[in-house]
Image (cartoon, protein in one colour):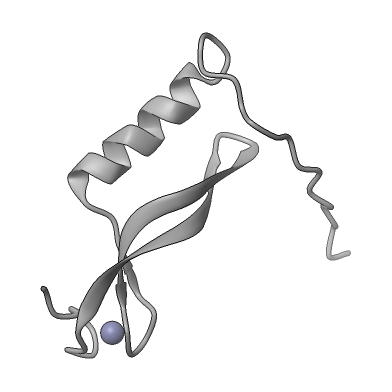
Length: 78
Ligand SMILES: [Zn+2]
C-alpha cells in the first residue's frame, strides 16, 4: 500500500469510472482499477492503467467498440 503524495493518507485500489478528455471528445471507462486516497480522494493512475486507457481510446475507431455511448450536455458560459 502506498501513501498519498498530498495528504499522506493511505491509498487503496478501487474500481472507479474514469472520465477523461482526448482531443475534443470525452471518454468514460468504467471499473478502472485506480489507486485512490482514502482521505482526500486523489487518484493515482499506474503506468499500466494509463497505457491501457490510451490504447482503449486510440483503438476505439478500429477494433474496440465502446459498450455504450453517452450523451454529454455541453454549455457555453457566455
Ligand atoms: Zn490524499
